[in-house]
Image 1 (cartoon, helix red, strand yellow):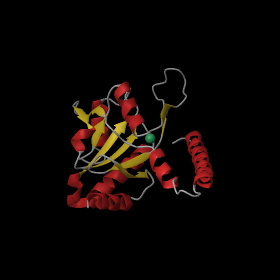
Image 2 (spheres, helix red, strand yellow):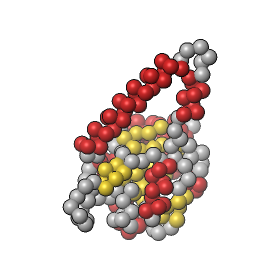
Image 3 (cartoon, rainbow, N blue to C red):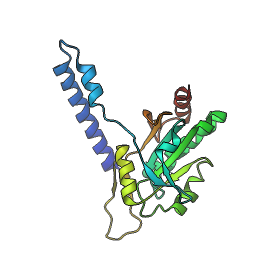
Image 4 (tube, helix red, strand yellow):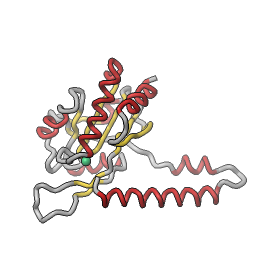
Length: 203
Ligand code: NI
């Protein structure tokens, strides 16, 4: 994550906090409708996707009902943030032992231009044999990223520079057996905490 992106994220968090405080003051009065309104307004994270795995096969979210998905969006050229997040996911899988068989760790690219299935295959293998690396057309990737409310954008570089970086949000989503959002982590989260949340979700 670049400094610019960090500042955007911080500014957005402040705006949300101020907005929430204002709404609380406005709606918490008689009637007690605040909880109801908050539920209705809560954005849903996740949803259907159709992407292409590291072996070139089409994969959809529906295949993973009954399993826990740990899904992270990033790109293989990422210098530090993505490898850190994926390593945390891999270490969490190791900590789960036999329970890991009910968990699918997914790395979905937001840079399909460079992240072909072959590139993804070599990359995800570094983090564990059970990793699924998903790519696809720009449309497929865009739709999946929108469903998960993932921010991504090519960082400014000289025109046609193939070594461009991507700004992107860095969130590890934990989706339950029904494919519904349960909680999330970042690349800085402790693998033990991720593993514990997965155990809870598997109960
Ligand atoms: Ni990254």
